[in-house]
Length: 142
Image (cartoon, rainbow, N blue to C red; front, side):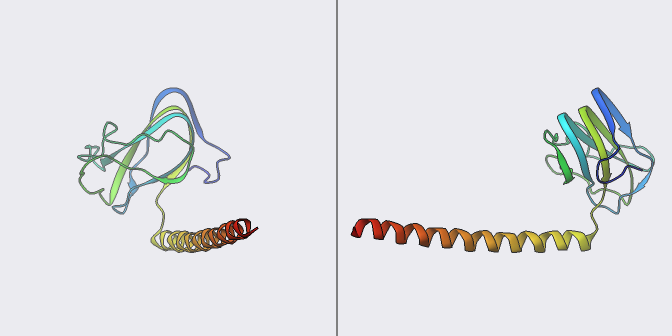
């Protein structure tokens, strides 16, 4: 197991493939924490080792920047991820710290935090707009 906060990781200065054991994927896309200067891509295989259609390394959108609990994405339509799967990581000049799945409760919590931050940002933007309007009116009246 990898430590989630990045104190230990698998580093690959060149291209390497890292294969997991059979994991309980629960039909959800994995999330990855990695330090990336090159790229990182992920493929999904079922528990027999057969590639899941549309979830290959070629279909994986490469991660090009450092990622913290970043959900892996694939281009185009793909078959659903099975309940039990094997992950294959193509690591190019990157360090893979952890991978897993975000629980639905944590996912809801993150969305709630995002909505609250968005509300605060909108309120701050409205306040700044009002400030600039009042400063502009004050400047014009002088």
